Image 1 (cartoon, helix red, strand yellow):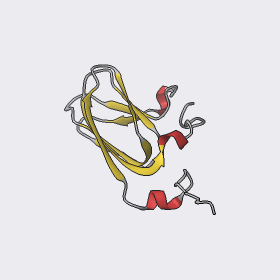
Image 2 (cartoon, rainbow, N blue to C red; image 1 turned 180 degrees about the horizontal axis):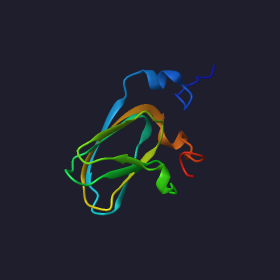
Image 3 (cartoon, rainbow, N blue to C red; image 1 turned 30 degrees about the horizontal axis):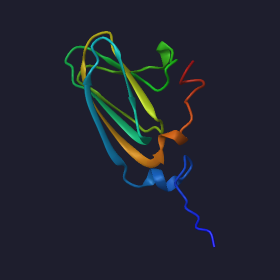
Image 4 (tube, helix red, strand yellow; image 1 turned 45 degrees about the horizontal axis):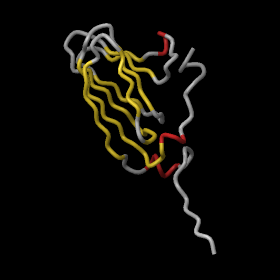
Length: 121
């Protein structure tokens, strides 16, 4: 008799309904971009711009056009309810940020690349 082991996948609703595994990061952008790769698919991401004057842009694809970057103004935070395996934070200055992600139990290797209208165009 075989033992079947079932793991949650991208379309497993229960993986997104339960409380997520916490993931945190802090950093400074130094007029550059930081790519944060997650070990598991995200359920939610919160980015806090800790800088008092400079903005941060967040996007979810390396080829994102300027129109598909989400602005996080100085001193503000943005919450993204999104399933993804990475986020890119950029700025023309050097703002500090704190990032919190709620992770599912789905390995990031199962996540497809985000493309298409609204993401890469």
